[in-house]
Image 1 (cartoon, rainbow over the protein chains, first blue to last red):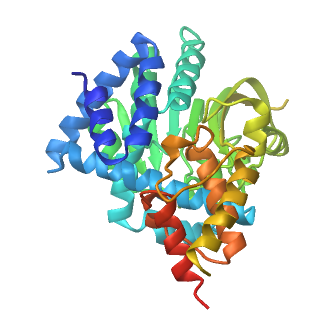
Image 2: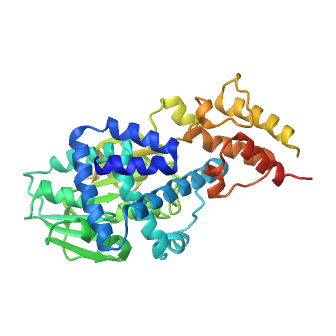
Image 3: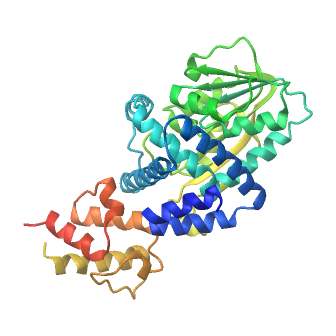
Length: 301
Length: 81
């Protein structure tokens, strides 16, 4: 039995309905992506062992996370707003709360290959990064490294001659990333992006699922201009209508994201979007289904 | 509010949210019995139930009821005169 199947079987033991949905998801993922999932989860199990955790803890954390997200989604639909109102609020709830942060990270790590829309965005990321191969990328910055999967894959694609920096506001997150990235070529930086003043400029910056965690995403995206080389580009992702503990800025639809990118002084090079549920556009609109949006962007000339 | 009254209102809310006139809720009804009742529509059912009965569910309660009967009993206990 694969690790993914083992996880789904454990989820079914706790929440049958959700487990069945996840089984359908993993069966629809193409074999190459499933293989990447297995490799990632092998690293995950190693990581658990090193930190005296078991897969049971991971599955319990995942169930905690989806229940928490369901609760936050109810608040969002009910009030039309995210319950987290400020960065200070998010800090108190999650980033400065190691127990919550750890559960959250474990839940997110398991969701990476259980959720089809996460796999679809990851696939778009791989294609986007591959388009830079042979284009003389010398420096790469990941902001909000999370579990390190994206940076790890970028290193595989772009090679070891690139200088890689990984910046995160959370030490817990950085420690997790270190455990997942098999490379000595990464410099890990514990800092808030607004306080980060490097001596180098970057050819490529990735910032996955970060802009919804700040009060002013326009300023955040705009700050990338000062970090990029003149021909540099950034890869960003963000969701619409996705209630969770630490989402602050609510994008109600894709157009609102495009407007923020534009106001931040960037233009879209290529983009991709996918709903978190396999539903028609009408149903997605009616039920405020979260959409995951990803884009390669570059500063406007 | 009495249990029978609660389940009657539940039935009306389920028909509205799930857009299915044929729904007839019973104590033992679960999501497995109603095609349109999935994790997505469950959120909207909870929102409408909270709004109508003027109550709030906790995170554990939202997903924790075994069937419609358990939900209605909980709501009845929360709305006792």
